[in-house]
Image (cartoon, rainbow, N blue to C red; front, side):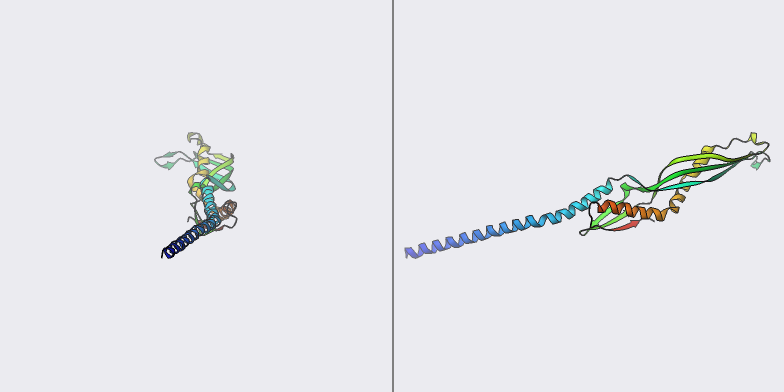
Length: 206
């Protein structure tokens, strides 16, 4: 009877040891599989994060340089009780040219990542960023015989009328199609430099 008990104990210990080895082996296999699998998911997350950070770091982006030129007419005269006095009129034609910088505020561009390589890029309204190479000069000036009683036309006011908000909106409207194409090209290049397989959809503010 003692021998049977001893054999049962030995057999039970062997079974327990085998089960322990099996559990440890399974854990090792799962750990190895996890090591090989995890980098793939991390790469996609890393790419998405890098793309979003790259977009968020951008400030104002000049997408289009538009050369603007024209002639602005300015008139002035003296009045009495709201009625113009003949001969006091001044007329000034100013020829102007400058390069308008049109683009977008990159800090307001929003990018959303989805799936493995999908991105939605949402743009705010385009903006008049600035101007350069400004040139204003008098083209024609015509003054009445009594124009000395009328203040000179301030060319600074002419500059303001050419660069005011209404004029800027007009420049943006005329170049809207070009701005959209340039925005797509710029951000496609930016995103694909981080994620070459990126599939990008663009959405523009009305």
